[in-house]
Amino acid sequence: MSTPLLTVDHLLKRYGEQTVVQDLSFHIEPGECLGVIGPNGAGKTTTIRMCLGLSEPDAGTITYFGQQRMPADALAIKARLGVVAQADTLDPDFTAAENLLVFGRYFGLPDALIRERIPQLLEYAALSHKASAKPGQLSGGMKRRLSLARALINQPDLLLLDEPTTGLDPQARHLMWERLQVLLQQRKSILLTTHFMDEAERLCDRLLVLDHGRKIAEGKPRDLIAEHLEPEVVEVYGQGAVALAQEASLAALAQRVEVSGETVFFYTQDSRALLAALQAWPALRTLHRPSNLEDLFLKLTGRQIREEG
Image (cartoon, rainbow, N blue to C red; front, side, top):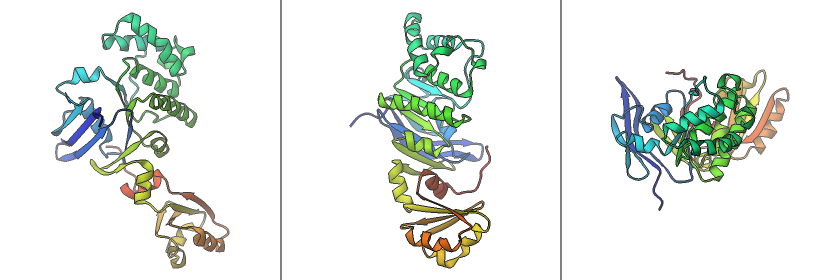
């Protein structure tokens, strides 16, 4: 058995009367990408902050590399971590290459070694042609890739990425995913928080689902889908679609029926009879697909929109 790079045991965090992380335990194995998903306010960012020593838990332990404790051994631990935060923390006064150089110095790396790594990291981030550009001259996707390259300057054993593709357009997200896939192929270990279910399914070996500060599910994406969901989904939308949720003849052909906005979701073990019955409503549009992580997320955490904070 390999030693986990990070082990979190019975973590607890309160702010006043509010408990934001409650009895949370998980671990990350070498070469693994663990995804943390959950609604706004589920405790994802608070958990990351405690893992980085930026916020101290009220109870529980955070152990890195089998023996080092956070926050007691914070300096030694951070020397082996790479971090990409939600907010842009690039220095606007330095060029892309200078951002990497200055950040490398924080780890006490010799300038010669840092300068040797800079071209490789810029190439990895697809930013070789932007080495002399300052962050203000870069697109959002370029800034995120530069932040990722900067997080790799110390050749970390573990990367902590807090919603690394939030705010990016689809093309930029896909390029970021491609860069992260390269790291996973190199057997890097990643703790990733995300709101994008397709991102979680593409990148993560295991998922941790949080809600109201508690772990409500954990496992491989496909295993969680098989455990909690019917295998097939039929979405029906268009004018008058919502009324179908009350059609007893259709509900009898599905294991579960849900309504979100103007769409009715029929969850079923075998959709053939349902699809045949829906032909009686030719004006409505249907989408037949396998169940996915978004369905899992909504079943476990609900469809109600939650505000930040």
